[in-house]
Structure formats: structure tokens, C-alpha cells
Length: 440
Image (cartoon, rainbow, N blue to C red; front, side):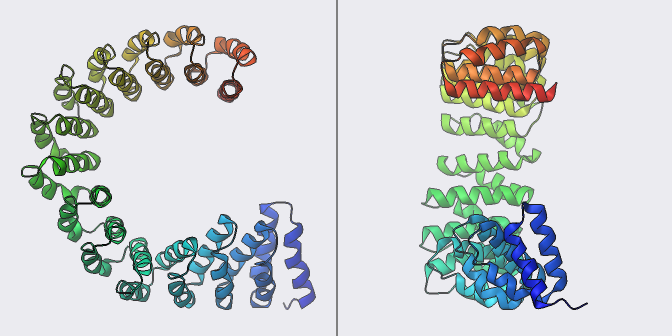
């Protein structure tokens, strides 16, 4: 049924009077149902002074697939509102192929946000022809265009882009090479494993870190190459390799990682301890426990982190010993790790740690007690800890009490909130009380 121009105008203008998102959505749904006769009205609303109206207009145009709105939607990628920018990019993605030429041109826009949204929109369109055009842009004379094309190819997860992106890895431009490592990680092809492993030896720390993350994204397929590298790598490369193996979490790495704990370099041992813990194996606790008497505080601290990552109950005893370490950073790590393990056997050591002379240890002990959730055992000790001289500790204690949901803590928390010398602390306690009421 035809709708008059006057009724369409009235309906579109009602977007400016809508009381909420649901009302605006209902209006947009009606305009989308009307179709092309309503397009010009929505295009006009892209310039409205209310960003919520501009968002609604952009969304409607995208749902209509209004290809002659592309130019104004491209301009909306530089809108003063990030929400409008996002919705405009989504609308261009829905319009699809007709928006591709303008989006490609936007990759050279002076506005960095416009370039970013254009790359994301191109990646979301997912058309094979888009990938080919983006690959062509890898040879553009403008580095910014090349980088935007690399990012878009990663978003697109285009398999045909793997070899061109590997070539980009050899670029002298660090930002461009780093973007290529990230894109290859998004595509997650085993073809990229060798080049990414080689990138772990880059002179640029940014490229090394990005390559490590991408290898972790690729996952178990990268393990054999990483294990081979571990046997021959120098110290710096070894640090990255063990970190990636830990993030992948493949059990095939366990033997090599336990062997690496014998390395004479304490930095390698510390990194290996953290990686071994991430495998989450019961047997890892034995090897990590052997590190708690190390002469190096960094190794003992890493052992605490690794033990926490195992989340194994047999990690409680060595972690309890580390709560007595002479290095406060190690004690803090041990407290946090006991919270990760979540065993009730860790409650008493943590209660004792609430009296530690270092406030950071007390804070993490309180937080861990809230994580473990043993109401009966921890409530009394935490109530006493509300007298801690440090505001940050008192706030964490209050949040822990709220998480425990102890009815007897409510009165104490109310009193503490009213007498707190810190407005920030009082607000934290009020939020904790609100949480307590929600969970009761």
C-alpha cells in the first residue's frame, strides 16, 4: 500500500521526538517497511543535531540497503559521536558491494577514525573482490593506505591474502610489519607459522610481541615449530617462545617446559614457570614447587603465578609457603594465586596474610578471600580488617565481605560507610552493600 510523502515526512520527523531506543526502533522498522520512498527522509536525518537520531537514520539506511546513501554514510564515519561512526560503518557493511569503492577511497582519508571504520566495514563485507582490491592496495605509495588495507585483510580473514601479508612482514616500516603480524594471526593459517616464528627474532619489540600473540591465536598447529625453536633459541627468543607455548596451553609442550626450568638464566626460568602453570596440569605443581627456594625473587614470584594458573588443589601448600617469602611482590603474587586456586585450604593462610606489613599483600589477600567464598571461615577476619589503615585495603575488604554475602557484615559495612574519611572509600562500600542486597 502506497504511503504519501507527507506521512513519510511526519513519521521520519517523529524520530526526533521519540522517548527511547525502543520507540526509535519501531519508527525505523516502519520506515524500512515503506522502503525507497523513505530513503531521502532518512538521509536528511543524518545531519540532525541529536546523535541518537543520526544513529537511527544510519541504521535504517543500512537495513534498507540504500546504496545512494553511501556518500553521506561515509561522511558519518567522521561524526562527532563514536556511536554514530560505529552504526554508519555497520550500515555500509550491510549495503555491501555498492559501498566498496567509497570505502576503499576512505582508506586514504585524513581522519584516522574514518580509515579505521572503513577498514572494519570492508572486512565485514567479506566479498572476494574486496580482498583482491585490498591486496592491490598493499602496493599503494601511501603507507597509511597500506596499513589500513592490511588491517582490513585481517578482519576479512582472507586466505588469498596470506602470501601478500607474509611479504609485508619484510617491510622496513615497523607499524606496517606489525599490522601484518596481527592480520596473519586473525587469519590463523598454518602457512604463516614459519614467518611468524622468524618474526620473534625481529629487532622491534612491537613486532616480536605481535608475532607472539598471533602464534598463540593460531594455536596448536604452531607447537612443533615452537618446540624446535626452543632447543636452539637465544635467551630473548626463548622468552617469547615459552610465553607463546604457555598461552597455547598444548600438553605437548610440558616436557620441554619442565626441562627449560633448568636453564641457568633466571629470566628464562621465570617465564617458563608462568608458561608451565598455564598448561593447568596436576604434575606441573611438582616442578613449580621446586622453585620456591630459588635465590631469585623473580623466579619465586613467577612460581607463585604459575601455581595459581594451574588451579590445582595441591598448589595450596607451596603457595602458603610463598606467603612467608621475604619479597613482598612474591607474597602478593602468592595471595592472588590462592584466590585463583579457590581451595578452602587456602583460607587460613590468607587470613594470616591480612596482617602482613605490606598493604598490597593485605589487599590481595582480602580479594582472594572474597574469591574463595568461604563465608563461615573468613567473615570475622575480614570484619576486623575493616580497621586497616589503608583506604584501598578497606575497600577491597568491604567488597570481599559483600561477595561472601554474610548477613552479619551488613551492619558493619553500613557503619563503616557512614564513618569513612574518604568519599571514594564510602562510595566503594555503598556499592558493596548494594551488591550484598542483590545477592541476598
